Image 1 (cartoon, rainbow, N blue to C red):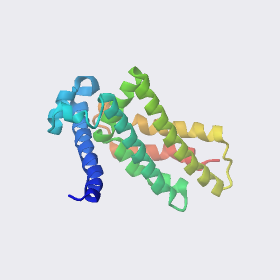
Image 2 (cartoon, rainbow, N blue to C red; image 1 turned 90 degrees about the vertical axis):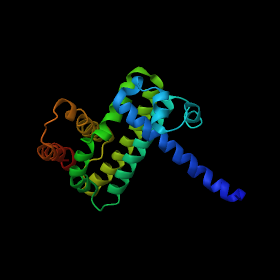
Image 3 (cartoon, rainbow, N blue to C red; image 1 turned 45 degrees about the horizontal axis):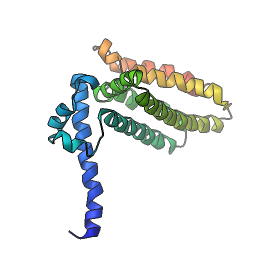
Length: 204
């Protein structure tokens, strides 16, 4: 293999290996919890030796950090797509069906709940989660501020950030509902969420 080809393929191989570990860790965390899942269990699920995993992640906290970053990128992509639309506030309302559906999916909330639980125990993970939350809030703030300015509404930062906190709380709260209310009516919840979001988005 030529040197240029090797340089090009190495990052791809590393990214593939990291994804392999993350996929295995997500499965293990989902079934055994963060503390219950050992690096040996993760390595077995990933189909590689524990020593090999340490080439990509120093420890389980580093794996959690990677998941936090993944979620930041996921939210940033979603908000970026909404920002491309002509009316950001209406776009957020139109997107509620997908948003509610996503936040009720076990694949989303199980991992996030593990991250938040670990944040309560580990200051380092808490800082990562707080920094990630700050990034998402800032991006959402920019989106809402532009939509309100288009309507000639006030864009006071403190008042707007308070609305954003409530909006985020609504969607984060959806993560626990499938656990406590496994028979919930997703369609009815979606419509109720739309009603709850309407005054937060569409009133001055």
